[in-house]
Image (cartoon, rainbow, N blue to C red):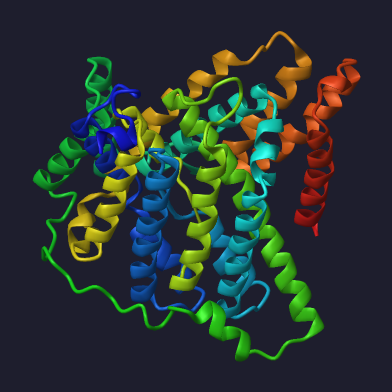
Amino acid sequence: MKRYFQFDKHQTNLRQESLAGLTTFLAMAYILFVNPLILADAGMDEGAVFTATALAAAVGTLIMGLVANYPIALAPGMGLNAFFAYTVVLGMGIEWQLALFGVLVSGIVFIIITLFGIREAIINAIPAELKYAAASGIGLFIAFIGLKNAGIVVPDEATAVTLGDMSQATTLLAAFGLVVTVILMVRGFKGGIFYGMVLTSVAGIIVGLIDMPSQIVGAVPSLAPTFGVAVTSLFQVEWTTALMVQLLIVVLTFLFVDFFDTAGTLYAVANQAGFVKNNKLPRAGKALLSDSSATSIGALLGTSTTTAYIESSSGVAAGGRTGFASIITALLFLVSMFFSPLLAVVTDQVTSAALIVVGVLMAASLGLIDWKKLEIAVPAFLTVVAMPLTYSIANGIALGFIFYPITMVLKGRSKEVHPIMYILFFVFIAYFAFLGE
């Protein structure tokens, strides 16, 4: 096992990888409850989606660990599940069964273009500065999510956002978790993020803000309501030209958002772990194939697009450097189906500190950008700032990719821009045009 996962090469060990896998799981366990609630609004069975979410995360993360040997976990993506429920099903009026078919098709297309190396070629064509900007922007984005979940940042009609009520008990609990986590991290504890979450959970239970679980073991909800519906739905719908056009738009949107969200996440986590060499991600093809396969498997099980999770950074921060951390995360997702009541202690206040601290760690990539050159600084800045302000990783990437060719051409450096970047320029222009319709 040590030889297969190359523990010595990555200067890690079984204990460190196991702790990292557990940390990643705790940081993203919220999806087990959030995803069923969102997809239930689309008319899907909440219990079945819970099981599908756990299985999709387990299988996808297992593939990532065994095939790509990366400490990166996968699960149904936030944002993509909201698009599935509120835009596709409730907005377009497409039945959730057929929407699952759209997710399945997008996964299959991803597998094909990954096998031919198209995805990897596109990622490698992206300049290092934009990759650093994407990594930093994602860091700010998840830190913003952490601050919001903690109640430290709240909505405001006059200023969009403002400081929350710091006297609220839940906000104080989150602040306690942040202080404890920072102390542990500054003191050099590799598992500081994980231990911070444990201490915050214990504190929450002691003061009565977090309920003790009502039971330890619960029955696994049946998959029957959603399993295989992505395929059987094809024979239960009356096909029309309008419906096929709508479904095509759905598939393209799933492809677009997942493509760049996954690319940004993979690069951000890999860069934090020190895997990126010469602006290229080793084993990128295998990592992308893992993601593509997980999307297809998740659709067959009964959930929206499965993608790489930025919360994997918390595991990397805890010392994860190999796919064995992903194996641990995958196993915990399987176990969670039987012990779901115990996950109730992992509240937003418990995970918020982890997200904020990981955001700090990822923002380090800002120092690698040459801010003195405006042709680099402008697209990089727009990439970074747009992610938290528009609450979308894809929007940040789109703005950066549009402005990069423009500023480089104006500076007389057009020959340094890869041809793929010019193609992506027009793709992202079309993307914003589609959003505006």
